[in-house]
Amino acid sequence: MFDSNRREFIALLGGAAVAWPLAVRAQQPAMPVVGFLGAPSAAPYTRYVAAVHQGLKEVGYIEHQNVTMEYRWADGQYDRLPAMAADLVSRRVAVIVPIGGAPATMAAKAATSTIPIVFNLGADPIQLGLVANLNRPGGNITGIAMMTQEIEGKRLELLHELAPSSSSIAILLNPSNAQAQAQESEAHAAARVIGRRVLVLKAATEHEIEDAFAVLASEQVGALLVGADTFFLSQATLFVVLTARYSVPTIYTFRAYVDAGGLMSYGSNLLDAYRQTGVYTGRVLKGEKPADLPIVQPTKFELIINLKTARAVGIAIPPTLVARADEVIE
Image: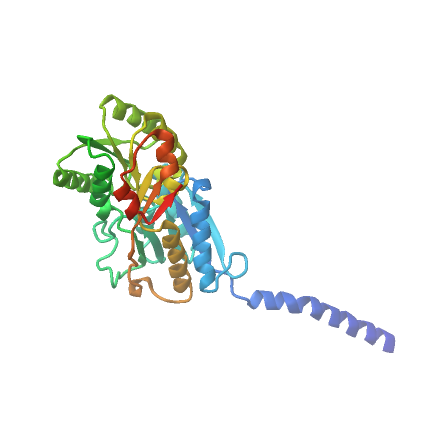
């Protein structure tokens, strides 16, 4: 009798030992899920996603430890973004982080008015109708606005200084980008100030980019400005190859082009902007409301010049321009 009771007690104790960790796990809250909505392909944006992770880590969030990620990539096909955004909404993610500027951000905004959105934009979010006020965005959206469109005029001035004898300058835009029209208007206004003709070229695929360079050569345009666009940035290597082939002085929005072998860039620090995106995402996960988080704007723009590329393609950079550069790649 005693042995029977002892065996029943041990069996009961063993069952409790198994049930205890199960009960504890059941009581633990599920990890929040951050949905990444990417307009470009994943591979070229690896370091920018890593920068978002760094920002999250700064406020205490590490993937697989206390936060989970869902990734969606449109591979430069912006018409796929609405369905991808709807999918993230249906999965009830805690925050949506659009990767790749206006196209992804507009798709996220159209998909939900309740799930928080933390963007990283080159455009003015007020002009795009995303927020009413930069200091108090309101609604479910906030983020980083790099204002790349606002300095297209400055890029044209730098390009004119680089190639002063060019009577015309081309600007390459992606017509699928929501800010393309505003970029074109800004470029025309800046061109009038410096007294130069602007040839607007448009491309949304690799093949169209190659065609645009052929047109640029046939029109004998002396310099090129590549507009801010996620798909363009993912094709940085292609741009480097084509600008070298046609020996055309070119200015870009971000230093990633110059790191890949491009000639010159003028803009804000994109890696740091994505890090700040991660910090804001973490603050939202901790309970802060997007409506109360001011839009972060850059305080500095960097001029990066690649002299190694200039020498390789036979382009002379004026010493005054080199002297003003924030960084020169030898």
